[in-house]
Amino acid sequence: MSSIRQALLSLLAREPLSGYDIKQRMNNRLGPFWKVGSNQVYPELARMEEEGLVALQGIEQHDYRPARKLYEITEAGREAVIRWTTEPGGADQYRDDFLLKAYNSWLVDPERMIEGIREMKKQHEEKLAAYEAKVAELTSQLAGRSVADPLFSSISVVEFGVRYERLYVEWCEELIAKLSRREPE
Amino acid sequence: MSSIRQALLSLLAREPLSGYDIKQRMNNRLGPFWKVGSNQVYPELARMEEEGLVALQGIEQHDYRPARKLYEITEAGREAVIRWTTEPGGADQYRDDFLLKAYNSWLVDPERMIEGIREMKKQHEEKLAAYEAKVAELTSQLAGRSVADPLFSSISVVEFGVRYERLYVEWCEELIAKLSRREPE
DNA sequence: TTAACTTATATCCTTATTGACATAAAGAAA
DNA sequence: TTTCTTTATGTCAATAAGGATATAAGTTAA
Image 1 (cartoon, rainbow over the protein chains, first blue to last red):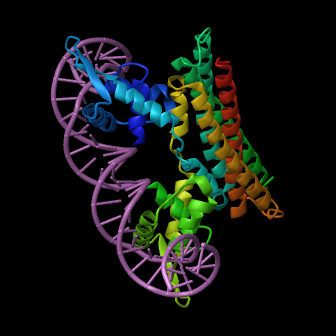
Image 2 (cartoon, rainbow over the protein chains, first blue to last red):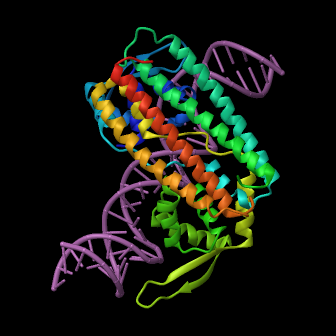
Image 3 (cartoon, chains in turn purple, green, red, yellow):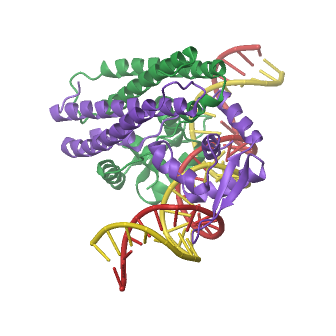
């Protein structure tokens, strides 16, 4: 089972959405965790509808606007997400262009490398701030809810983001320090 | 410029290698950072040779063994890596099946979810131990070398791995704790 | 008033990536 | 003695993913 499919189903497990909604959530809300194009979303929705994992709930028509096709998850779809979520395994590779660039830092003039790292650090600082705000926002809504509430899972994931961005920023700082001294350690 | 190409060139910038060597390094040494198949390595090497980024250094023939085709990076290839390394930008998405599963944890029985997380945690603990050993091993060879030595860059990257795996393990532990209490926070 | 942006759908083409297969032979283990 | 693993090269077919383009119309800003 492909991974975009899992992502779409994971979102639809929470609420009915249109293809456009899904695209927006994946590119903006879930932030950096995933990016998709409409070329992936619409055909995949159609395929899943054929297979009975999602169903067209209805078509919303606002005056002079394209019709919104709202999809909801079916019982079969729900079962499929749960099955996938509990089954073991998952990608064991981590792919990051910037790490590969760091792997080449020995080739490059330290000053130029430092510039690049500073830029990367800035980007991750921005993400860190955004995630921290998101955690605060979501946590304030959390009172009285259980681990069976989607909000709990959302916070867990964004919290991972906070830690990850913090790690990235710290690592950038240490790399800059080492390169400035022109000495490892 | 595609990303496998960058990975191959980054390795060849350090030393001449055969397609098989590259595959081994990417799947074993660089560990989880990248995985490739021979179907990606051999055609890409051929393409890069055509474009003059790498050159066939020679063919090693050991008795009764397939011939080893050793490739070395050319000056044009070296320039290309340096250009790519210093140019800004890089993937701004982070993709992880397990995080997506965590996003679905609200759907699943906490006990079953905890099992899955424990397994994930174990895998990351193993990687953490491997990276820590690798950092120690590489650091012991570091004395007296400068930031212009490939070893410096290798350590930086593996150090990122150590921090990353540590973060992952801690995050798993907190998720387990929350799910055990059946209460967020 | 013209241009840019947002809402919404969807397809087309190209490139990346994955998995399975094919060949060939040495060395180790059952 | 047969089977499995490692070294070594590659190809083929299928799927995943990315970028560009198309249509259509309302809102917003220069």
